[in-house]
Image 1 (cartoon, helix red, strand yellow):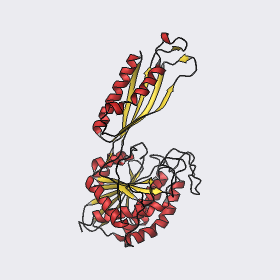
Image 2: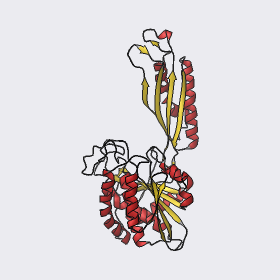
Image 3: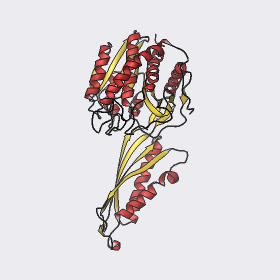
Image 4: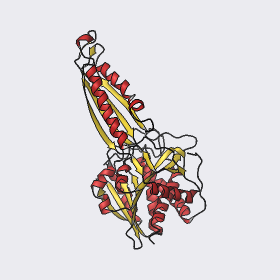
Length: 399
């Protein structure tokens, strides 16, 4: 992908008004940043969002998927609807950004930029409510619990798309790798499936000076770690993309005792369900056979957290076309990211696209999930303008 920063092709009324509204939304964003809330506890956050939407004459439905909410903007006589989604939850991180609006809640911070995502959607919502230059409905999906607790799935199970049907659904995520305002997406997979596993190795503990009288769970665990990291290059098709990382080892309590149990934890990221299935089965086989060879036993708890985020090709192209019309260019991402996103559940129900909005400050910015991360407000107008444009363009044909 080219790192160049886009610029508007013209001073369109949409861009002009969005730029004006973004000044107010910056203050809203900083307020949300200062008061972060964890998954399914976004009561203040949801109330701030709902209050603003109602002030702008937007119909609001609360308590969907616990703390989620939906705003509805209607215009014309068409029943066709487009969904625009923003996530609301923060992370359990102690912020170190030093910003004047840094988190006031100890151990909780918007270190992934969800405050910025809400501000972009709010900005687009205010513009769309003012202008209503479309025919149909825009469903504003403010989602809780993206960070590992599947708020998108909770909203769907609570009747999201039954109550608020959408022909297409779109979401943005700020992307510090790209210059502020750069728009990028791709057809097909754009974010990975996220799986978690815990391996428990059990042996006959004993004295460290007499290993022949024990079965060494530590050595067995080490062999599992070493071998597990060879599974992808040796058991998975080299044209496929996957990541397996063991991130935690826990066992033993002193220097001269072989423990009877060691626990390993890690994550797997894939983009193809067939690769996901094969890697899980291969990991289970490796653990079982390695433990048996070492005179131990082992069990694997394997959980599939989020599926891969897969963009509908036509919707991804619509997003690129809209961004090109607004800014003169858009970037077709060459490859997906191995990070995960529960917008994937929405894309399993409705065609749509997940889009990256560059948010880099200067030459470099702290990465997502870093304690010093703070959303770059320079990215706010571009994201808001794209969301508003997507709604107008996708609902224009029914006018």
